[in-house]
Amino acid sequence: MTFLYKYKILLYLFVLSLGFLSSFSLPPYNLFYLNFFSYPALLWVLLLNSKNKIISFNLGWTFGFGFFISNLYWLTNSLSFEDTFKTLVPFALILIPLFLGLFYGISTLVFSFSNPKKNILSILILTTTLSLFEYIRSFMFGGFPWNLISFSFVNYLEFIQLLSITGTYAFNSIIILIFLMPTILFFNLKKNIKLSVFFLSIILFSVNHFWGKSNLRQYDLNEKRDLGFTVKIISPKINIKRFFQNEDPIEFISELIYISEPNLSKKTIFILPEGILSSLYFEDLKKYKDLFSNSFSKNHKIILGMNIYENEKIYNSLLVLNNELKVLDKYYKNKLVPFGEFLPFEKILQNFGFKKITQGYQSFSADDRRDLIRLNNYNFVPLICYEVIFSGKINKSEKNYDFILNISEDGWFGNSIGPHQHYSHLIFRSIEEGKAVIRSANNGISAYISPKGQVIDKILPTDKGFIEFRSFKKSNKTIFSSQGNKIFFYFLFIYISLIFFLKLRENK
Image (tube, rainbow, N blue to C red; front, side, top):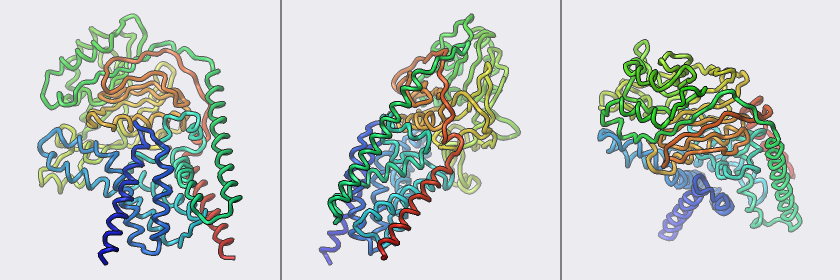
């Protein structure tokens, strides 16, 4: 009995360390090759314990917990700004990874019911269950598609051009399959089968690499188009703690104008981040109209994130303004951050002194429209903060557009790996949609990214300044932008069909 107890403890510690190890494959480390050990080791442990359903579930849950606690610890930083929330830090640090780890646990539980054996079939089944429940995680309870294992390849542009066809979730299933493949080395299979699988994998990997390289080379030959105006992406790096110190708004506005370096005669669109004037509603900003009209001209348009109070509701909005602060266009955020921008079960939790993490007590309201913003004959899809992480969900109008526009406040992440993880989604969205991404982030990574995921220019969280451009290259419409996440289900059908076929062969 003592031996069994010690065995279980060591087993769970081993699997916990596997999850922890896998987290270093994600940005900003990108040590993807670690998963060629951690994923096969997880599968092997599951095969040895598959008859015990409880242990199978616990193993997946433990792996998921180790994975998420080591790459999402920074979420607790958002609780450190007000004393009300500081006591919740230890609970959030543990409970969030425990919850997210459940999706791994359910995956391995379902896997155990398939009566897995040491063969290729078990690789396919675990690939299917993991990729399916990672997809479910991305949409259930509002969804949190953060740190899918496929993001470990974000720096390998030739390889991830496949996203233009598959999208993130189908691509994620392919990556899981690739990471699990080395397990066949330990299966009792004929040598020629192992060699065939090995060489087929190498061939497919090489074909994808050269196709991606050719894709990038072809795009580089595209002619640059002059926009007819300049775009300035502003990265002000205003410390988020200053917003809790009731500083004079004139200081913030003057600082933003100074960093923007407006040229009165130059036709320019200035893109500023979300949340930089969070202590003001837009109506209050009008008191400082002279600061804008004296610093900007009729040649200028200003895009920035502002809070708007309208019909007794508060909206986190993206506004397009002229130099007289007249609203030319606007977008109200659709996808709000739970606890950050709204308090779930607000009427109940308010009685216990809880509120949303951002300033003020009233929760933001969500809108359900995302119309394109048209500026100087070009269309932009507006996205605020983490709305950019939802694959296949960004263009609700389904009309053609030219740019993905994202504004964000990443100061809530602190000096952590969080801004780098957030930024990685921009590269995936650009390739999926075949559109350039413009991003202005306060205390995060601001960037201009090509439709192929190439980083044309960026500003790191530690720096302030601006990115300036006045030309761009268009790309062809992608298969994924037309089909969306239906492609994931096509892949799921292929996996299930292969599993069914191999099961039939196994039973003969």
